[in-house]
Structure formats: C-alpha cells, structure tokens
Length: 495
Image (cartoon, rainbow, N blue to C red; front, side):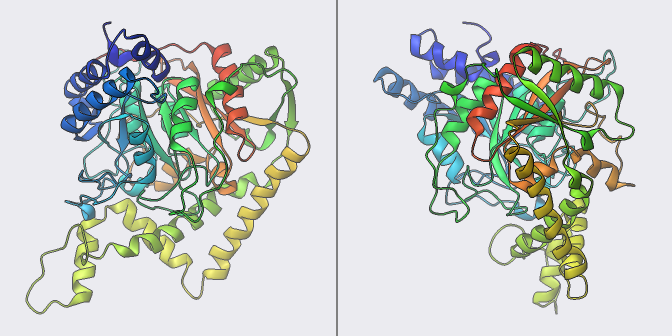
C-alpha cells in the first residue's frame, strides 16, 4: 500500500487486521511525512524512537489477536498532555526543559490501547489563543492556501499543531483540548473533524491546566468514524480527577448508523450575528437542508443568553488561569530567571514570570487577577458565574422541549492569514470563539464537521451541539451530516 500516512484510523485499522500493512510501515510513512513538513511547524518534539518501539509492540499484539481498535495507529499528542520522559512545555518558555516523570491519563489510555505516539504537537501557549501565534515554538502553519496566494494561514488555535498535522496527513489523528473552542475552531479551519466531549467524559489528570472548569480533551481526526474510534479510547472514569464521570463508555463506532429520522435539530436565532459573512450563513442553511433531507425535523429555537457568553467566558477563563498559573514560580520545575546579587524570592518570581510567560498569557493572568481581586470579585467573577448558569439553563430548556441536537456555524469565517489579527486589538481574536464558548460554559459535547469550501477554496465547518453524555447520538448526527456534505477536499501540497 502506498501513501499509508493518508489513511484514516478506520481504514488503517482494517488494513492492519487484514495483514495488508504493519504498524511499523504505517509509522515509518508518518515519520517520513513529518520530517518533510518542517515548514508547517506542527510537530515540535519528535519521538521516532518511542514510535518505532510502540509500533513493533503493536504488530505483536495484532498478530496475537485481541488488539483494540487503536492498536498500531500512529497519532500526535498536543504539547499540553504530560508525556513521561518527553518534553511537555504547553508551548511556554516557563516550562523549558520540563520532562514529566508521569503520563497524563488520556495519553496513557491511548498508549494502553496500542496507539503509536509520533511526537508532541504545537499549540498556543497554555492553550490561550485562537490562531497558534502565541507559541514559544513559533507559529503553526495551515497546510491550506487561498487559491494561488502564498500567504501563510492559521490552522486555528489553540490545537493548531494538531489540526495542521491531521490535515496534512502527518499523522492519522491527534489529541486536542478545548477550553473555548480549541478543538472545534481549528478543525473547522482545516477541513478535519474535532469533538469536544461532555465535561468530565475524559480525565483532565496530567493535562496542563488553563481553566479547570472548562478544559476538556478530545480527538481531532479525518472523519466522524475516526473520531468515534479515538474518543472511545480516550474516555473513562479516572479516580485521579475529581471531575471525571463514573459512567460506562459506550461503543461510539457501533452507534454510527447514519439514521437520524425523527430527530429534532434546533437552529438558534441568536447565532445569526450581524456582519456574518454570506458564505457562513449559506453553509448553515445548506447544513440544515441536508439534515432535513436525511429525515430530521428542523426547528427554530432560542438561546437568549448567548450574547453574554463571550464576556462571561473571558472573565471566568482568565480568573481560573490566574489561579492555575500561580504554580509557575521558578522554584520547583521549568525555567528560572538569572538573578543578580541582592535579589530575593519576590524578584525571582517577578523575573521568572516576566521572562517565561508570553504577552497573551500575561494579559490573561492580569485580567484574571483583576476580576478576582477584593473590589471586583462580585462585579465581575460572581456575575459571570451567574450568567454561566443562565446559559446552561437555556440549553437545558431546549433539550427538555425535545430537541436532540443544535446546528450552528463552527466559526465566523474561514481561516485568516497569520499576522492578520494583530496584537493591537486582542478582542478581534477573541470574537473567533463566538460560536464555541457557550458549549464549554454549559459543559456540553460539541463537534465540528467540514461541510464545504469558501470562494477562495478554504474549508468551512458546521458545529453540532448535543445533550450531556450523549456523544454517541451526537456522533451519529454528525455522521449523517458528513455523508450528506460529502466533503473530500484536501490541501495541495506546497510544504
């Protein structure tokens, strides 16, 4: 078989079972593709030795029979997941040289399932960003281009390296994390599939924390079936994470029938934003028509508190970040600033953090510290928490009224050029999360599915939002949408 790195998880798994290829061959194909793709800056810590060792072990397991679905499949791991003995920096200078002595629960589950880690993937620093431009490793670059234009485009953020690597066929799939859209927005920008499961479905243990009540890990894949396969391997109760749900993990792939007859799909009127590009509006209408043609009932719904979601998110997330990032002080691990004679512990903290944290992280830590400070706690943080409760109730009311899933755009535009949204106005960048943050605030599952191309030939995605713990049902609706949309476009290789 040629071009093994271009396979998806399901195709590669079936080829491995039939004996058409081996995990070693698959892994070698991916490692070769990674080495030829430095221009994308997707893989930032390559681990070929670990990959080959795991591939050989996987081939033995497959030969012996009884190998799980992920066995032998080469994947990338976002740099936010701690991986034993491998640099895990969360794309920050402050964690320079940090090699954990432990493995995150999610990456351990994937390893136990026999998957092959190819290396660590680029991301926004501490997952704070929507364009992968805040990384200490430099920008991740999308494999997509606008027509004949050579301008480098963002693969989205924060899981930009994961999106770029999957879209460019450097790996069969990758892990991502989603705090306000960091799986779904990059998936939409790169023509890939990304699912954020219900909060608590995947363990957060061993994942570098950004905002603990919002963060959730999920897979980024080439198809909805692949997402179902990988999500099942990542999920499960973990006693080391107090927010991890003690629920059995269903066989998500077995639930992919594509039959959505009789399902009610809600279209929220509040997501029709002023100034939304016509192409996004048309894609949304087309998506609703596709689901209707597949037998679903399309109903108009209202989520009245949507307009407060972004401001509430940008109070709660920085508040939690300022608390979580207080542990980076130059004392126990990571980088420590060089001190001058007479410097005490306060100077060490100040210099280490000034050197170690990038501008966006500093901005969010300062915002977070401000909203938690004595005079502003009630005015900002407590108020944002109350708004969050109202947003959650909006969704509960809609689902209680019989709606099975909600269809929205995934992003307000196609991918933009690197450097086009400048430092001058960070709010412009924050507006990229307008369709995705509500899902995190409410703790719901959400999936981005590629559904078309814009006039410049760039991918556009649609988002489906599901009921809590019903990822199987959500994946099945996404599967029907994917089949109807028939998206097969791939980026032209330039790298």
